[in-house]
Figure 1: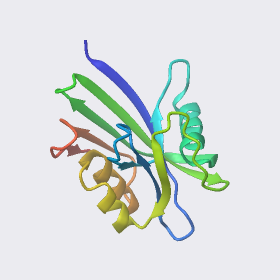
Figure 2 (figure 1 turned 90 degrees about the vertical axis):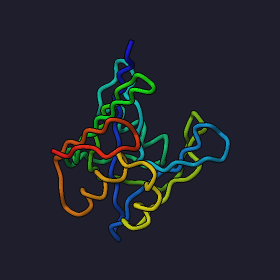
Figure 3 (figure 1 turned 30 degrees about the vertical axis):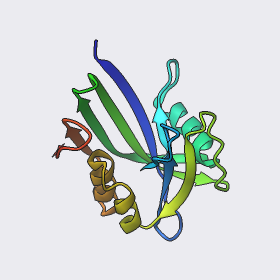
Length: 155
């Protein structure tokens, strides 16, 4: 049976226009992968509730307001027999960076320029392309990828 995963992510920008990324070490082997702060929507939780919870856990920041839906990504990972649907929301925040990830996967939370973010996300096309398009002014796009590496389709 195919696994269906619903993910939410926050696009948080500082006053200099830098975007917040978190460094994840899911394998706990020093192999850090950068993403927007966010995560899986848990049973009984709305997408926006999950967004607020995940941002708080991964960064220590509090979401003040969700401004708009920035983009949606669909990844069909046939190798793992799973489909991931990820929604990225632009949000405003308050507080200081102070990650307290209960799972212990977050090793860093830091603001990056768009160029630095592109480098950190270079090996993960479904994470890089939509975010860079958004930072260049595009919003409301849908992206579909046949896996985590191959080119996708932008609508």
